[in-house]
Image (tube, rainbow, N blue to C red):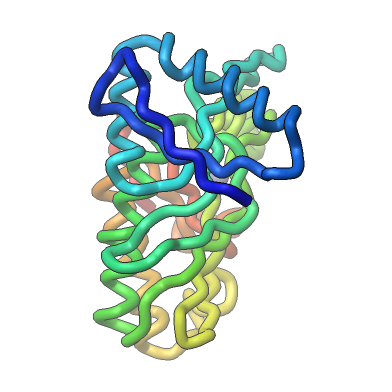
Length: 222
Ligand SMILES: [Zn+2]
């Protein structure tokens, strides 16, 4: 894998680092096409991508796609890694996410999760585990499209620490040590300050094993 850093002519401050597999020429061409659409994107989209780049996240802007039936991925990115205060943060199992959601996620990972882990658990975070993001489906038990159907929500299932510990929502929300249980509540509370909708184990049984983090204009935290 080779790191490719791009400085775009239409926005002098806008740069992005994109990981390109060296073996694949087709992949290189695809990245150039994506970069072209990146440069010609609307100003608010370019600003969002610039903000995300400033967090030192590694990501690839994805082409807009409509899948029908109310499902689409517009203004989305594929996140490869995020940045904490002093290290790279891996992300497991994450698909396309909208750029504003990616920005909230990057801030939460650094300030809400990693700093809480160091304070409460005495070790920094090396990876955030998820159940994914985009998924063309309804909110369970309704006929309403889920925020996952537009890549506007991430389901976070656990955290891996530098000392090797694995903290999971399912295993540690109720059964972890005092510190682990406190850590999970603190990271949910800090998520509520950054995402419009946050659902966790206290909300219902469907969320017993993950935090649902959704970019929305509501203020719903359970
Ligand atoms: Zn969810």
